[in-house]
Image (cartoon, rainbow, N blue to C red; front, side, top):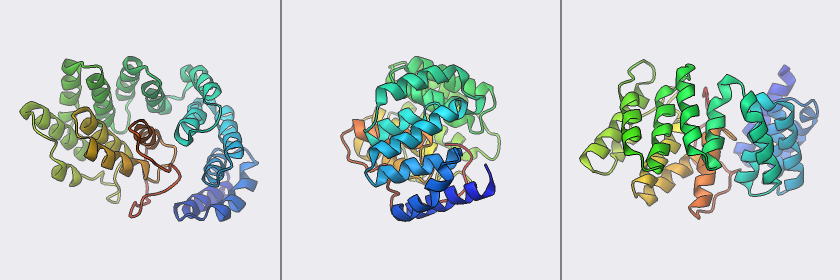
Length: 278
């Protein structure tokens, strides 16, 4: 992507985080015409926020079809989050794209499998992420563990959490500590220590990691704490990493729990900053 395109997408996202969607639209749509990925994604979000579902879907479909090895699931994610568009066609395109996903996008494929009713396959993809050197292997292991729990396979769940809890490579100590907190709650049959969870950080300018937020929400939901699960899902849904897999999963989790959510709104107090995965 050329610098003007990158600047346009960055500025548009900045404006959208502050609710200035018309301004963002005027800035980003001309550069989206170049078929650069980030401006097309930003344009799709602009139009969705403005209620122009046809234009929003057009841009996200173009992005997906132009970059299938990276964004093959994005059209489906957009439809599922916005609850608009041709979700059947989007899902079919994503299924065709899965075998061709770039290795760095395997986690996105795992999220797609989990969302579309293939938890066993999603577990295997998360484990492949770990084998291929994912940047945050504990979180991949914990997401696989939550899927195992949803399948009532407590033995697999516990073994995956144990792997994550023994991963002590810096700078990922917070994620190892999260696994230890999961272990403690399960072993003692006690509620998750949310005070301890809230003291964790991902060491990137003290920005909450959206995958961490979503994973905590899943643990709470699976262990009967609906109220706190909703809180963590809402935090992940309001994260700046828009259309990242965990952002999408959190929005869809709220939809499925019957909780109204605007996927185009950033929660008050949420922070923007660097991150290295969706």
